[in-house]
Amino acid sequence: MAVPKRKTSKSKRDKRRTHQKLEGPNLSTCPDCGEAVQPHHACPSCGSYKGRTVIETNED
Image 1 (spheres, rainbow, N blue to C red):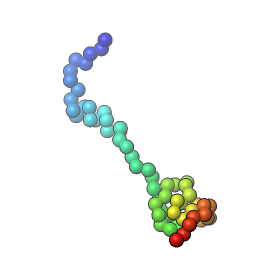
Image 2 (cartoon, rainbow, N blue to C red):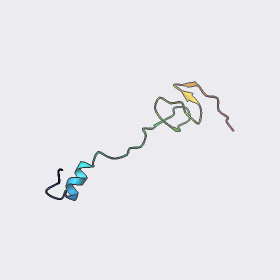
Image 3 (cartoon, rainbow, N blue to C red):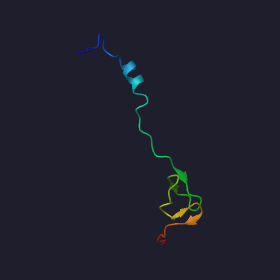
């Protein structure tokens, strides 16, 4: 069984983990209402996608 000869230092351990991070979703703004929306998705607030109304929403 392989056993490490030396203890892995904190610096070496953290350098290995630099790419293991969480990223938030990419967001853009809706051209109609200005709300944050994911790319290639219909806007949840106004229901528009590529300048057309795709989803009917209740506007109070």
